[in-house]
Image 1 (cartoon, helix red, strand yellow):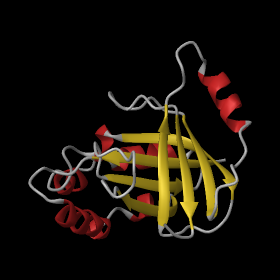
Image 2 (cartoon, rainbow, N blue to C red; image 1 turned 180 degrees about the vertical axis):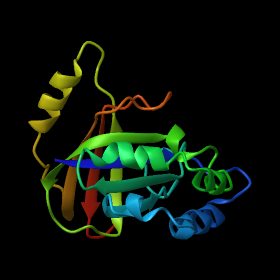
Image 3 (cartoon, rainbow, N blue to C red; image 1 turned 30 degrees about the horizontal axis):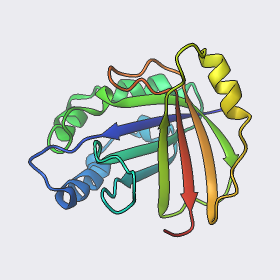
Image 4 (spheres, helix red, strand yellow; image 1 turned 90 degrees about the vertical axis):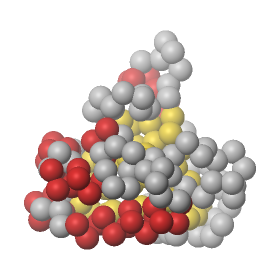
Length: 179
């Protein structure tokens, strides 16, 4: 089973959305240690397009989706998030460092199609009284809906305690061929 590192970030208020996205994407070239990069299978970055699609939250500005080689990759990646040079750079364009808004998950590919330029990411919380196991079992029983243009569908179950304020139990990815 693959691991997944997912973060839900807010931009530094000194930057407008366009400047944030440009600065955020340049962070990838900062020089993560080769051992960290070796743990990645894919790295996808999604900027929130606030106001363009109905009911999209404007609370956050970016989502990072990083498929990892396995669940055993999670401690390695989590450790690298604490490196001084990575944190110093993140403070320039995020409101805080990524270790404070990162979630580590087990990834289940429901529909294994292509990664595309358009993704909807949905963050889920289980109802009170529902155990994590029951949540995972009920969610796993839901197949891929017949959504027009759906290319890829992934269910990510949060398996490590998330940071305060990020009490999500699941993260769904819906990848589409076009808008």
